[in-house]
Amino acid sequence: MKKNFLSIKNSLPKHVNLLAVSKGFHSSNIIDLHNLGQHDFGESKVQEALQKKRELETINQISWHFIGQIQSNKIRKIVENFRYIHSVDSYEKLLKIAKIAVEIKKIPILMIQVKLADDPSKGGIFFDELIRRWGDIKRIQGIKVNGLMTINPKGLSSNENLKLFKKCRTIADTLELTDCSMGMSNDWEEAVEAGSTWLRLGSLLFGKRYL
Ligand SMILES: *Cc1c(COP(=O)(O)O)cnc(C)c1O
Image (cartoon, rainbow, N blue to C red):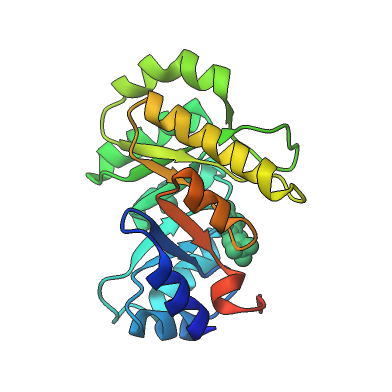
């Protein structure tokens, strides 16, 4: 596993960041990667993440990223505890995040999750709505929208994955956004080829999930 981490990390172009998705893994797994120089960790459940944050309190320099589905009643906890939020999947949630961010004087770094394929199991804003709302989104104070995030449906061919990722990159470029959070354990190579700036890798780095 550690061998995987270093060989992947060392193979990535400079503009590609690696987010180690630690959901389902223990704090000790996070420490292992942290000792190898990994600072960015992604979690998708608030409770699970908070427990690990407590366990890892003494370790400096961890940046926590929220990548899970955002429940409205958890937004305050998410804004309080995560520097990055990759999975903002509606305009209303953007507004709510901004309101709380201003209240607690934090500026979260956000990616807007876009839905590029019709996959009922995944959230996200459709392209048309994103474009329609873009003027309003840009006017929201107190947040930093740095990019887009996408999750491809399962079971696509390598070519189909590549095509969807390129679409995400093109939209981000059109909106003058730097980041594309895309690419997981099964499709990260296509994501790198298409211009990902944040790979979200879990099982490929850590092995099989415990939790
Ligand atoms: C779990 C998860 C990942 C990592 O998945 P792996 O297949 O283990 O790499 C990436 N992104 C999101 C949004 C996830 O929920």
